[in-house]
Each structure stands twice: as C-alpha cells, then as structure tokens.
Amino acid sequence: MAAESWLVWALIAGMTLIAFLTRAVFILPGSHLRLPPTAERVLRYAPAAAIMAIIVPDLALVHGTLSISIENPRLVGGLVAFALAAATRSILATIVGGMLALTLVRLI
Image (cartoon, rainbow, N blue to C red; front, top):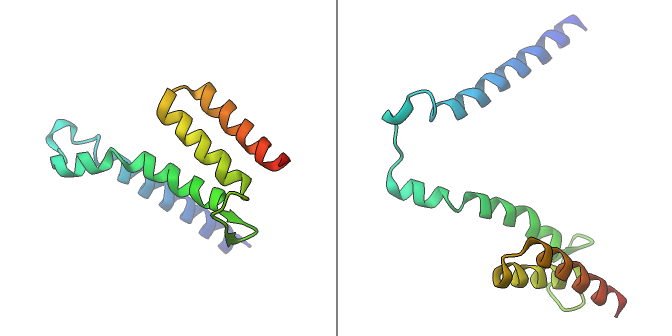
C-alpha cells in the first residue's frame, strides 16, 4: 500500500509541475517571448473552437446516433439560440429564446 501511495503522490506532483511549466513558459520570460502574429491570430479562435467541440456533439447526437433533423429538439433550440446570439448579442435573449424553442419543439 505504501508503494502505491508514493506513486500516486509522485504522479500528482509531476502533473502539477507540467501544468505549471506549460502555462508559465509564456509568463516567466516577460515580454521577451512573443508568438508570431499568425499564431496569435489563430489562438483567438481557440475558445470558440473549444466551446463548439463541447456543445455540438450534445446537440447533434440523440441516444448516441447522429440526428440532424427538425425532430431533434436540442438541435433546434441550439440553432435558435445561436441565431439570437448572433443577431442580438444579448445573453438573456439567447437563453430565453433557445429554451422557448426547445420547449415548443418538445411539445409539438
């Protein structure tokens, strides 16, 4: 049991060190380390890409199968919410409109 406990703590410490170093490499050198302009432009899209990677499978999959149709209430609600977000830039309108669309499609 002691060997396993030691290994767990060593893994936690190693992962902590790696996580810190990968983030600190951009902060510690100060302004001496600059990314190329192309990399900075590409990294601006990283948060949107991460959100889409999380949300799209949940909207498009029903019981593990791809369902891109009007009969998929989550997809319809998500598309309505996306359209409202793009048109109004209002978080409240996006949430309310998406939830209303989801509820209406489920009721129909």
